[in-house]
Length: 252
Image 1: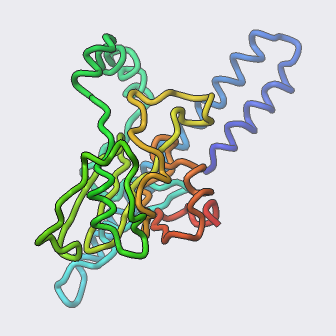
Image 2 (image 1 turned 30 degrees about the vertical axis):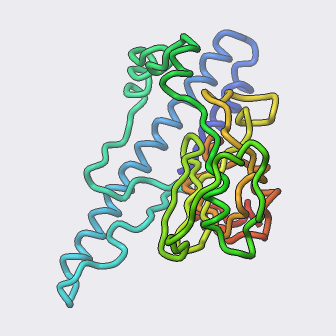
């Protein structure tokens, strides 16, 4: 069952009732909403059946070991769903209740001075990041602002040192044994374009090109606040991308 059926029913209703505009609109909206709800129920039922089948296969395993796909990704009707039995699908009522009861601003202080105090923007320690980067990636110099931040690396083996720099939201720059790893890269001020979309709560602490070049980029999912298309274009094939199922074609 596809949600496109709801759109089809809505359009059919529009053609059948085009003489009465109020009835016309109300019926189309109701048909689309009903099909969305029925589609969600169908996917929820298929999810429960798939989980039951996996559990039965696990119990019948001849080796007595857990089957490797017990909690693997589960795609139903072109949509990824939660493979864990304890998960409860959210209903339309859950969504309405959340909209009505959530606190304005999600508890974030409106006073700018409180934001500055509680979430200060700190520039990364570029000298340390450069020192821990692989020699072929290191820039070898620091900007004038970083001269006081030079780090004494005496006795520090970059191949045995781990550093993690939080750049906001889920964006982190992690260095492990000389490997530079960037997670969920977001460097724009706004989420859609540089001038459109929700704005960052706090400004980005640095530009992408100020960091040592990443070797690997990990992407958890493709929501606008976890994946910056401009970063994808800028890094291109100069890095190794690790992305979720279903995103390969978009990246290609």
